[in-house]
Length: 381
Image (cartoon, rainbow, N blue to C red; front, side):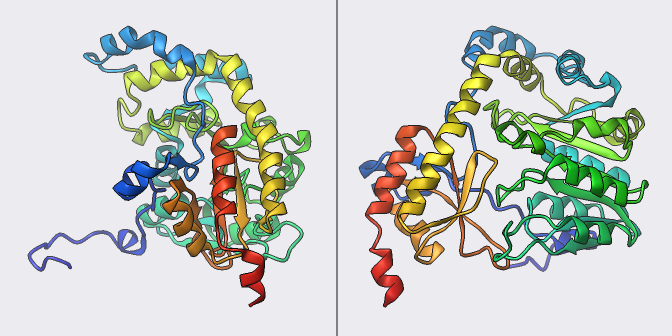
């Protein structure tokens, strides 16, 4: 209930926004469920192996860093990123999570006359940062459920929206919450169509799990398209979701503009130290990637065998439609200590998103699915 004594008025975009709905955690489950079952969280697309084991070795370094302000621009980590990716140091901007970077980009390049363009089914944070920037929201319809690429981005629809006074096109590739990926050639054609004064932000949070070489990173397109921004996160394959660290690679002039409104010390000293270690541990990266590439088809096959519809995925999660109502399946799985993510949105609310866990966690999920009511009989009744 609103307090009538509260007088300050928010800007209109805030009233249009809905707060981000995070996935549930173990503490959200009833105490009796936590006592009777091992809790398996498969809702937030975290790395089931956690961060690099080398993180344990820098405890003293992190402790000593806490009394001093961090490097405002994180030069050492930016240099490591620039070396590996082969991009100019001046075009790298670090942030406390890539979602904070989206906010800075929106503040820099959007406004009341400059719309933010997104697909109807996409990462919900884009809506929040567009509204917060007091910019119009322009929605391009995602492909329908019965399309060969169900719920995927429609490049033609996105391009059409950018021709109508847009400032930024946000494009998650691979897509969250669907898991599909657009080929780099499609991204290249889209960039040729989009007006050069529209910033195209390609969010590659899940690019490390893509197998198809034709759907690789958009980074090589930066040389030809100065209006392109490619963002990455340390929350997924690097296992640092709790540290809050991400970065964007962009034209140096775009980076210079973002840095004008970027708050000082926006990335903590511990996050910078953790990022340097995680970025350098190639073995942990390979292990995490190979695990997902092995478990993803196995889990998809097992769920398909049980009558679930499994959408193609290039990520560390599966988007699935169970043979029973999604809300009921979620509730039944919760009672078994299995936390998955129900999806919201037109046409996709019959689906769930399930993170690829460890093999043991995936087996516990499959065992819990076996205990669900017999879907085939109920579906026929």
